[in-house]
Image 1: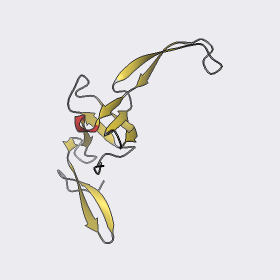
Image 2 (image 1 turned 45 degrees about the horizontal axis):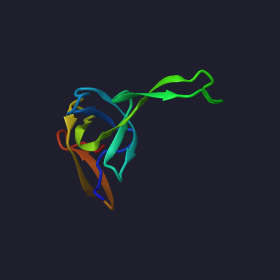
Image 3 (image 1 turned 180 degrees about the vertical axis):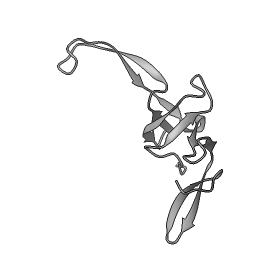
Image 4 (image 1 turned 30 degrees about the horizontal axis):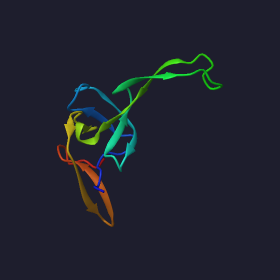
Length: 104
């Protein structure tokens, strides 16, 4: 399993695929599959039967996962996409933006 540099709560931009250019917040990361769910990106329609939770049933829109390689972190300082590095500060490992060299 590889070390992922995208974490839940990060603001990312899609850099490849059908949703290229879309931005959103990472809701969930699946480390085993190298995928992430991004808010408002890669929406799919799911047909649901009527149940106690949704008595009407019908078509529900929800986010599907997207490959980690197709998203890039947005630097909070410059508001542009950036690569992420890891360095040791004191006795902790921290993530930093390679464009602005700022700790994330």
